[in-house]
Image: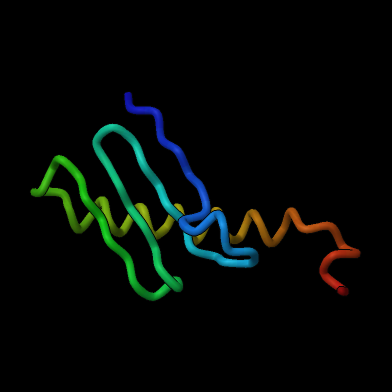
Amino acid sequence: MDTYKIQKAYHWIEGTKEIEISSENLIYIELATTLSACQCNNLENYELIRKKCRQIADLIREIENLNIKQDEKTD
């Protein structure tokens, strides 16, 4: 099984919600949460892999929002 890394796509820009998912066999990047790019080894499953990566990105953003301290939400 590959080791997957999930991180901000633009770590140098504060407050962005873009996500990058990468492994030895996959690169998925979301830009502005409306555009995405996916590169994977299995082209037969490309669309399904891209859809699953989008679901993962949405889930990570949801977790991030839930994990914000209450006092940070009111700032």
